[in-house]
Length: 424
Image (cartoon, rainbow, N blue to C red; front, side, top):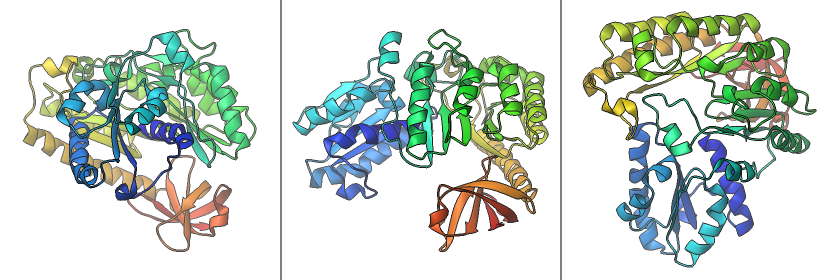
């Protein structure tokens, strides 16, 4: 979601004369688009701002801005803590950024972190201002109504709202006309798209409508909440060839007691049942997920249940984190906080297991023929890379003229984080 928002920010500022640069020392405007889901991500914001302070001292005209979830959470406090900061804008205020930048160029420091009401959000939903490229993100909904006990998203992204389907489809048609071949539909919980009344169709129907757009050859979506995986969505995996063979399905824990305290809305068995139905609908489906270790009150046996769930699901990749209390969430007040050293030990064991499973998953693809959408130039000279339907990166020898096309490659070697292929 933050990658998508960053692309929108770049597009919004282009008419003001701002372009992207990879060199902060040459920038006239530096924007930190932030996340506050984990405490570590929030701490990094202040570290980055500290590193940019000398640049600001050397070049007073340089503008520094903070956007995203930390900006939404901290608001005016950010300006007080960081006196050389110029702009703070929250998750509902991207549309105000050009105006804020113009004001900052005249020396005005501003904070905009107000939440819009539902009608305003629908009318000002951020669209993709840059329609070129091969793959693009498309926001279909924002916010979350689940209020998992550990999660700050509903407080910094707001309540759930779905974008109008006609606007989404029009945007994707425009992308297809610009040569985009693959779109990823984004939301905090895409599976509940349209269920609150703003859209005329549900998520499964939206997938079918996107699949009917000429020029779009692949469709991905993220993130999916397991409790909202519907039979209609599972049918899409069986019926829609354009829908990729990959789903991100965060479990967060393998223990029923911990899942209840997390307020996740499903049991271990219900999660595994959804996994089985998804894989039956799409054989070879690659599943990725999220896990939290050291949730308040989690004992060693419950942690072992998480490891056992991982062994059963066999995630292709897994994002894993130590629990960190987020201000204002229910779990921040729970008893039974786990010592940091114990959380670190559990995380290390979990990640070691996942590295083994990921390596085995990659090795299982050696000798298979994979269809790749070629996305760019590899780090190694003479190679380009593509992505499988199952979201695995494959490097192979080929000319950059292949970028944007589909090719078939035989997988010849597996590494921890990528594959090596040979064109057929």
